[in-house]
Picture 1 (cartoon, rainbow over the protein chains, first blue to last red):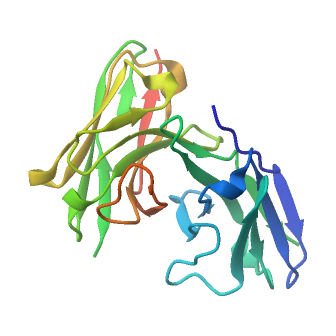
Picture 2: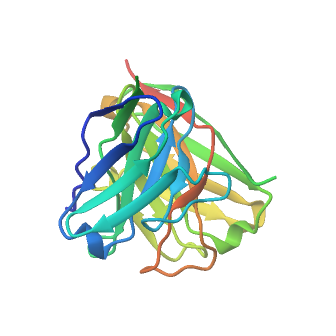
Length: 108
Length: 125
């Protein structure tokens, strides 16, 4: 089965740039989506198809995907960005939706 | 307003059954793939199952195959998850979620853009 690997935690200083990675075999050939989940809330889509922002998501959020790594980039990090972030793909070869294990972002 | 509202969660003994429902509103339900995603306490997200717009295709994570059944009633704008032979490890918040793109096919599945608030399922004796 296809697996996605995320770091358990990432820390970033207020106003700096956070990069959250998502590793997978040839993930660059897949569409990667990212979700933000704050405590006690449902997940919310923050990036779809590698580098597309849903309406309402600030331009500070961007994404990239190449080779074996996809990355969610959060520029000028704010306290409100503290949350868990999950990457996700659709693996058509196994008919499975796959989530990464999640990364806890801390803004210092 | 586009909305998904889950119901049907609760406490059930191991080996028992439960049926979850998800009521959709504010969009053309019959045009979208729909999914169930769960989250065990303190853990990450796990996709459970999805179903095509007309119900003709259904897919499941291996751990629930043969025990869970996803279905939908487009006339009632509703998604369901019948859960049988429940195990302690099925304890989780269960979310229903919508694919972002209407009328999509198997190979161009998209992100989940709308999520419900979740319903808690506790399997315990």
